[in-house]
Length: 96
Image (cartoon, rainbow, N blue to C red; front, side, top):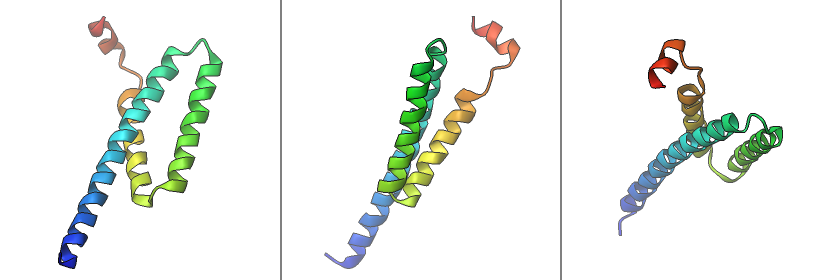
């Protein structure tokens, strides 16, 4: 095969990795926020979530590329803004 085919496959692989890490970051951020809110009475659960999430970020920083870590960070940031912001008072009454 010509070398250009390998370059195209490498580029496609990198793009898929970036998109996958962004989706993984979005899902991980949502999961941590959801369980953190439900475990408000149990501080041990909140501590375990925080330490596990920090450990995941450290492991990703060590074992993945900078682009994949950046995509994970963007996904987590979007999750924190979308699901982490407090809801306006008017919207809470409409949902109940």
